[in-house]
Image (cartoon, rainbow, N blue to C red; front, side, top):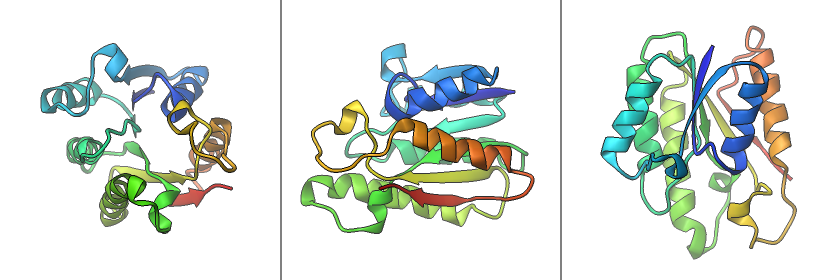
Length: 176
């Protein structure tokens, strides 16, 4: 099986990439450090073109203050339409509570992702919308408070994928 992961070089994306690699999936990653910037339409189209034959697409990369992650999700969902494929979307638990003005743009973009996932929950491809709480990654090192580990996200994802014949999870929110 083949998996594509955006934002695969650090944080949650890196943990997911390594999870699939350790399960002997054929893995390809797309991130700024490897020449793919989801802010650019031409890069989003390249990612789509290179991911058409993937069985699983992980929509993880987030770009500050725009809807690039949502645009990637829309492109891949359209390409995978009516196919027995899986999209794993990384959203955030922040959508379920008020946030500071500093985080409001982030929260709003994740709400739009959630709404898109919800509106496509009864069709193919199967979209799994993961909404972890504050996660112990470089991106959020400046925030205080309890943080979950990326391994916790992998444990949740593993449970969903290993039990996909029993349960069809479309959205799961978790955190400390």
